[in-house]
Image 1 (cartoon, helix red, strand yellow):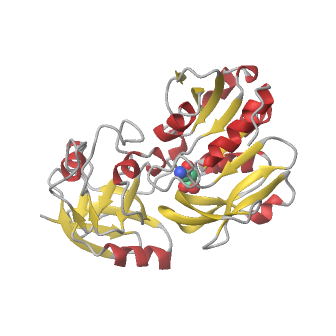
Image 2 (tube, helix red, strand yellow; image 1 turned 90 degrees about the vertical axis):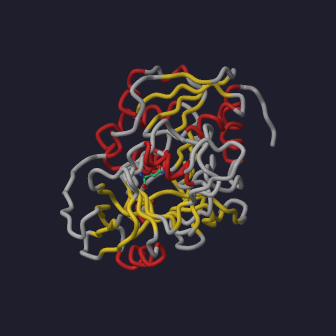
Length: 354
Ligand SMILES: NC(=O)CC[C@H](N)C(=O)O
């Protein structure tokens, strides 16, 4: 059965449509350049309502398993691949990728020139798109604020460590919680709209999570979030980093087509070292807006010079645009959890020297 990807500007691409495809799916079209990690990408809440194009031509080779999902649902609205492997080969695989997408009612298109689509996005910028079985289709305008779509409903605690971290949730990835638990932390996840319901004194550190959509949609909650950020050592990841910047008076802006992949080089101004990072974002902190704030740039993107992380001049606040929990991706930036937790431990009086 034929299927089509229609772009907002009228361009279209033809491919093979998956079977269980009842209605057209709309979303912002984005491309991911990593060779692996498709299960984590599909279930990462930061990808909510996006149509993901995988640029690596063979996707699904190792199937889908019970362990790697970043949340309990598939978050993307559709998927575009060159080839989706029918036969999955991995000892932990419980399903092929195609069967997993079909079971969850997520449409996908194969046999398309994914690199051509990517070139189009890179040249003309990100845009809305429709996956449909007709060559024609109407794109709906939407004022949906994704930032409110994926946060957890309940306040929940994980792990049993002696240090207690507040994870402010914008659409948290499982890997952030497991990275903290692996380092001896107890983690309480609180939706960002409910931070006023938790006491500022009960936590040894605060982490602001990743999440979908535009960070500026959090503006009305910034005063409350800022109180929490200033109460304890704080670490922001991706959306969390952008929200910290906004809370201290900086600005964010949309990139022409975002960074999504597992090999984005980042430079640490403090050490001069470059390392590889996993990334998934459309927005960045506008460096020119930092001048009037107490924040300074610590990390840069080597490819385009954009801001990749911040520190506060006087407070224990650290933030990164990339993903130190890195699923998918290289583990090169994991040490940032250790740097942050050393600050947390030292503040609590458990001296740690690194
Ligand atoms: N992974 C994230 O947290 C993404 C943050 C934000 N939604 C962006 O696209 O820039």
